[in-house]
Length: 213
Image (cartoon, rainbow, N blue to C red; front, side):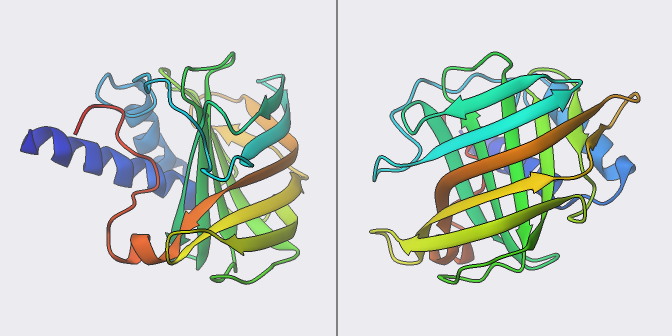
């Protein structure tokens, strides 16, 4: 039991790091986790209720290039997690479908310069897109290629938690860790939770383990 907890937490930390990567070498490490049977992306999460308990979470995005897709994930059946990040300071949110989707993707958005309870505009975003169960990972390797042009926060029931709603775009693609493929997330908008208080108490990892605790 303890071993599985430690393995889950280690994988959480490794995958959370993907949203702040600035080198291809570091992103390759995340690719190994994505392709590994023990890694989070390769395991299917159980069907769950919702992204936000308030019923208004979602992710919408338009992808072109190596992945052609229009993402329209409603609150129901979408897993989303969020926490503050340190380097550079801001917040990090992840989105994926509980029952899997076609394509089966995991999105991680690392937004720079966002502070607890405050709105933001023209914020840089580091975007990572993972094709779950494979070694296909695409990253912008920094926050200069994508921008959040509007971000708002609304307090949630749990102390230190907020519903963050944001919309933005990318002007340059996220490049593959392996190979020469690239994915352009031309537009995106989402609403999900960020747990400022819980994250500071080490109680709310960015992406929960897919295995049982």
